[in-house]
Image (cartoon, rainbow, N blue to C red; front, top):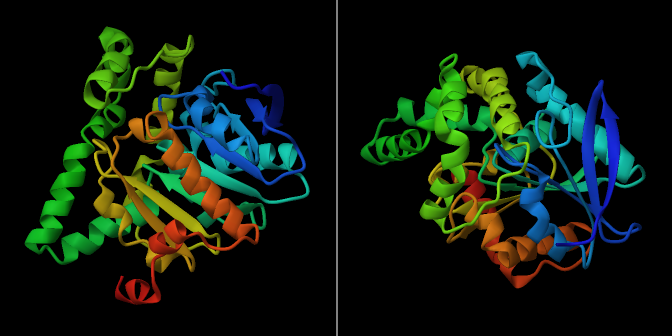
Length: 314
């Protein structure tokens, strides 16, 4: 287990449990977990990154040691962005932070960098297995407007991966699934599907139930058409090619949304990307952070850069 210190950050009446790894005075990397995880899922990556950076993780609202608001509307994207800002201001008040998100941590990361609520606070963003909700909606609409065989295959591939959304969308179903054995079977299922051993947090049952409010509060945002949401923040996408929940195809059309984009594919599953391919993820994050902080673009990062030609074609 890596060494870390703990602190509590207050944000809009919510108490957030925070961990800090590595020495201060260096670039700060904030790792945000997804559903139904806690910040502990980041421990292996955080331990590696702490050799070079000040690394911060926190339990998002509804998970782990953080507060669990009862009302669904408390979990809207804007509140999640405000939580991130409160953490960033507490751990790195004088320098912007480098953001890394996995699963719903990535979804809310996209909401933060495109939502205009954290201007100047995010230096870079690495997204793993979590799309921007608005970008995903546009991706779906683009393919429905041009239903070529390739586009239909892409849609069917993603919708087949999105079966779990039904449990979150139908009132009462998700909670029933978790209470009738889902809490016990989930870690077994992930180990069999991805070869990743998981020891659920003591709060896992509560995390699973409260975290469903993320879907209920934000899931239908992708249906809202409108102007494309963009960001000036440099973005790196790590797309696991064996992800059973998020198709790597949907991250190929992101060049229109950011001026600086890098994309890497990783032979891994949804959770094995950060639990089994830890060194690969840590290396990718390190290369981007070093480059944004003024270092030379590494050969691997340069290869992952989305070219102007690709941007124009997207």
